[in-house]
Structure formats: C-alpha cells, structure tokens
Length: 93
Image 1 (cartoon, rainbow, N blue to C red):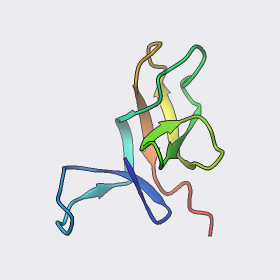
Image 2: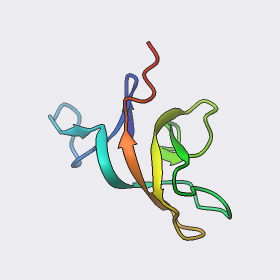
Image 3: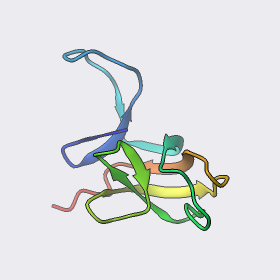
Image 4: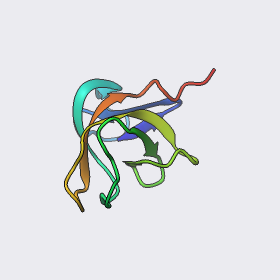
C-alpha cells in the first residue's frame, strides 16, 4: 500500500522509479497487509486507517489516513485483512 498526496491505494505491480504503473484506490474487496490481529481487533464493519510509516493498515486514526472498512473479521494473529478500500476517504479539502 501507499499514499500519493491525500489518496491511499495499492500499486498493481512492482516497478522501478520512473516507470508507469497502475495505482488502485478503490476496490470493493481487497486483502491488504495489517498489523498483527489481536483479540477484538479488525471486526467486520470497523474503520481502517493507513499507516504510511509502516505501509500497513491499523485501527488507529492518530496520524493515519482513513481508507476503508473491514469486510470479514480475520483470524487471531493474522497479518492481512479483507477490506473495502476507498482511498479517497482521507481527502479533507
């Protein structure tokens, strides 16, 4: 995952600096990297935020950018989460 200006999304393939590549900021269902899932975390319907420093999602709004909602509660200790991605949710102006 990445943040380009105010938009959060995923690159659809690896690329070298200067290469053109597709950047997806909206996906009804996508599995993304997250912090390790703890008890009671990432329940279906909860908001998720992109942490640009760690390049993963978490449930903390502090310093992070809203980017979607959890679609399915993941297993304990999982490091991926199924979300509905809308990378434009963090645009405030």
